[in-house]
Length: 334
Image 1 (cartoon, rainbow, N blue to C red):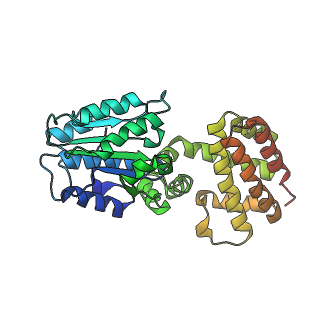
Image 2 (image 1 turned 45 degrees about the horizontal axis):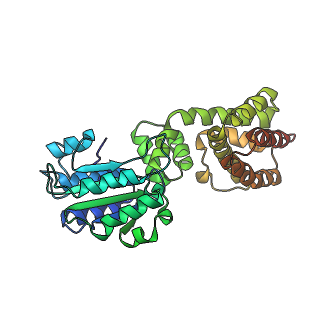
Image 3 (image 1 turned 90 degrees about the vertical axis):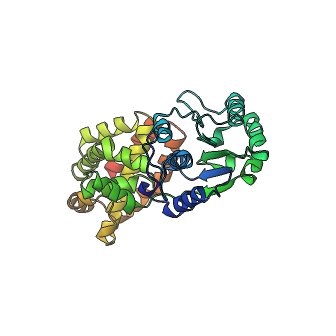
């Protein structure tokens, strides 16, 4: 379990600075809720703050990363840090996990003078588990800190929200995500695309910086062949990829939307700096000669229907074929 220096997180600097100062001045509330979309570092910040709380040799601004406490936290074996995190097969956090937390958090610390507990995806607490958790919030041990991490704070019981201080984490800006990938050696074009498609999430941009870039380039080539040549094999291949499953459909359709958005930007004379697929600008301009603007408007309007079908897993094969047929019919003579 990596523990990052609090100064090294991408985005949300003001929230992280407030939390860091609260720890260093001894004013961190006993119970806090980290709310925000998935992939913006909420859980990692909770782990790093726990390290800052327990570090034996912390500086004015950070944990040392070398003492026994820091090494145990990084190894995931510190006895005074309890983490509740759902495994792949579990869909909810039940009463037994919270009973164990209550039992542990009221015990005397083993190695430090305090206890820390992190509940990831706290919105998945069952009602019974949520009610049990209230016992800690109503009578918190003086030496314990509880971090509730969630992308859906409204799903928490109102009584849990009212007894905790909420810190809201924002989406990471595209510029920050693009810079992160460029630092890791990606081209500016690939970094720009990954940042635009990541929905403000560090986790997503790292995924996009891997195999999804290749997937996007292959999808772009298929769209280009369909639009400029009416290539039947490209039509069949794209339809098959879309129908492979919900994740594939959502990912590829999300990228296709970015391509048609760029085509419309070119057709309507928008600033070239707004293009998401800048690495394919020459090919986009060639493609734009084969498609009228009104057809682009119509297909972009249909994306809401297709993406909604993907989210609900409704007949992906039929919707995949519908999209590809409309894509093929967009082609006009140059």
